[in-house]
Amino acid sequence: MKTVAVVPAWNEAQAIGEVLGGLLPRVDAVIVVDDGSIDGTADVARGVTPLRPPLTRGETGGGVHVIRHVLNRGLGAAIATGIRAALADGADIVLTFDADGQHRPEDVAAMLAPIREGRADVVIGSRMLTKEGMPFVRRVANRIGNVVTAALFGAHVSDSQSGLRAFSRAAAEQIQIRTDRMEVSSEIVAEIFRHKLRLVEVPIKSVYTTYSLSKGQSFVMGLKTLGRLIVRRALR
Image 1 (cartoon, one colour):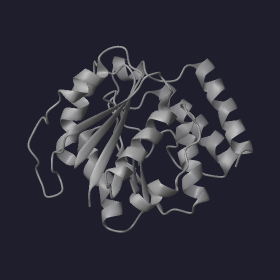
Image 2 (cartoon, helix red, strand yellow):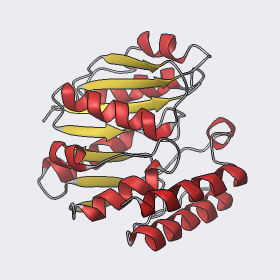
Image 3 (spheres, one colour):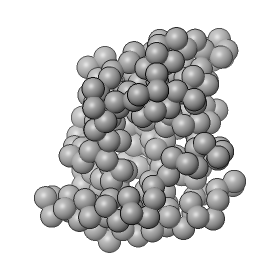
């Protein structure tokens, strides 16, 4: 099953090289969506080679393809662009993976297994199933995101804001992303429940650094995200 990873990136030149180096051996191809970066993110991504050769069957060490948004459109728009490109590339499984170094490449195999084994249409990597290394502020913010997602869309998962997800081709084709920014995480969960897709949550451990923590939403941004989710709910 051809696995294509989608990596949305905005001003991630500092971290994306190492992220892609670890990810490449574990998938068939990587699509980086450079969302209007001004720090050379695209150039760094194009120059990446795998940190190690493939270890097992299915870890093929594909190449990096960069798609660039001329202007910064937001996380949702970048994910939507990446998923469309992955499907056009013939992906059987689409994996979304953050560019800031928060996710561990070692978790990819566990993310893909339920789909490859026919047990799931969608897999979400949940930080809340272990909470290991997760700062208290992030845990609180995540719980708020879960409550909002459940209240607006009737869709409850343990980690609605996780950026590490895997979709079967059929699931990726059904999910409609209409939002452009951070609210996309809740929107994807809502779409999973709307289409009654089989969901499995897999425990993952995230890596938190000063850099990755700086990428989170501010309070004001969180309020804007809530407002856009309310609008998205009205458009269902």
